[in-house]
Length: 92
Image (cartoon, rainbow, N blue to C red; front, side):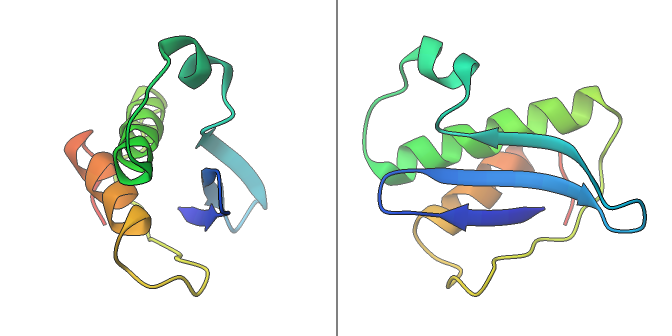
């Protein structure tokens, strides 16, 4: 799972490195995410994105992943996103 965060948004995607394709993705700009109108602190929103990508991955049969933080420190929004994904059933 590759994670990127900007000042306003957070993006996550699960990539198959051997086939070089994106299997599942989620971000704060997704239609489902905007329709649910998740509000709160950026950390709470990141956790919701993590649970969304975890749910989508579980639906496709993906259970084990490797986290790629892209150089971001493992705290704050990155940690919240990974915690949300773990709660949804992903193992990493």
